[in-house]
Length: 406
Image (cartoon, rainbow, N blue to C red):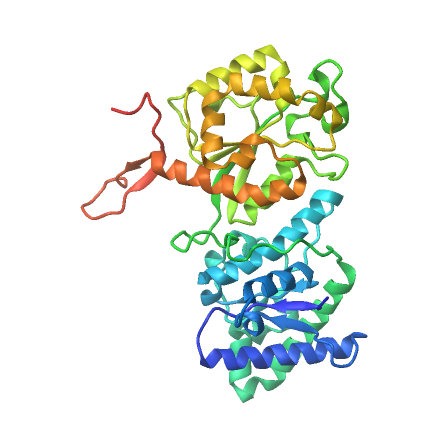
């Protein structure tokens, strides 16, 4: 297992030479600060593995095993889809660790290659709690590229690299997120969102359809539930974090900002004239359909035909009670929500058919998010800008419902 993986800054020829020097300097410091055997690699840089046969598989293995991820912040870095895929692949390990332990673990140590204004940072980078000023004021104002290019700043460069190496070693020794399953790098989404999207996180809604401990169906085990629907944890005891918050972590890693709601408490769904202003993920516990009043409300909701709402039906193969009642529960779900389930199977059969583990949930959720986002954009109403002048770009205000269509 290497100490650190260092993605490139995003492109160019002359800066590559300086990135390689930075990588060598960091590895030398890390090797000196640790008990790595002589000759053992202290880290990997993506350009070392982005060539030759099987490079995608090799990169996936590195991202699944390295202890620390060191992105080199620059405008080009955040414009690179490849760099966004690497960030996403590594971030999944911390999300799954938190799902299992309900404890946060941040093993990303960013380095300023070129200073980037906060307004240009995508959500995953903006949320990092990291004080760059510990590495020196000149580092903050000029970045490592500015320091390494000018001999005048040689001392500031050496200090910044030394402090960065110390931070990498400290994080590697104190935070153990464990190895992960290699992500199919070619199919992985970018943590920075689509290339043509704004840098800031995009809104998405996560709605939970689940009972609470107070209103469980007769005989249903309470181990999977809490005081609110948002506390539902179908993968207990393998995970300790409620599923809605795991889903929130996952969509945040895709540059979304999530709003979590309960179907039972949500009033907006009842008014088709005021459609939600964002795509939506519907997390459905099939046990929730044992309540007749909730079934009635879900059936009315399903009849509205909102294609920008993508369903996912989590269940655990370790939940013997759910396994025993699977045929009955699945039948009620299909009878109550035929439209959403049909749409769900058409776009992501694995999500609508039942997601049997936390690992499977992490793999399919990006597909569900993409479906919801695409359908939302397809049905969104385009309005001219306020006081619209000729040539101004239109704005999206929300999806069109069947009742709104001409």
